[in-house]
Amino acid sequence: MSDTPESVVRTWFEELWNQGKEDTLHRIFAADGLAHGLTGPDGPPLRGPDAYKPFYAKFREAFPDVHIDVVRAVTQRDLVTAHCHVTGTHRGESLGPATLKPVDFWGMTMVRVREGKIVEAWNTFDFLSFYQQIGLLPQLPA
Image (tube, rainbow, N blue to C red):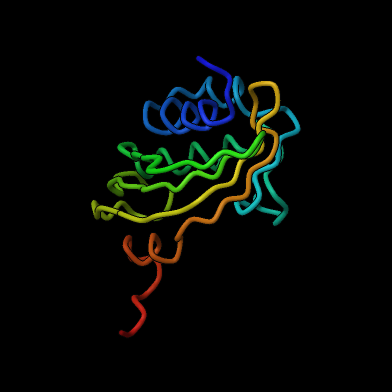
């Protein structure tokens, strides 16, 4: 693997999320790395692989076929902004009873990479649409 910031981000999505290689989490996410926009039970950003792992495990259990496609990426020195398309099927029980409904939503993340590791990320994914698609929130009127 090349350690350019963009290749690190693309590897993160391909190996961890698309292929389910959990060891990628500890290999690429810095021990003190911050994931803004993905809060733990207490509300602050997730810090480090051990705090990120429950979020990852819960999402992968609910969507074992999740696929995150990095549609485009823009890199400026150690920062990469990735525009992502997320698809999958709600098959697991970790986010409520499995509905077998497909999800299709978009998001963006800006990631700071140092020495081949993600040290900070700001995540903005359309979780409103996601929750509506699996029936956890009502659809908004048109």
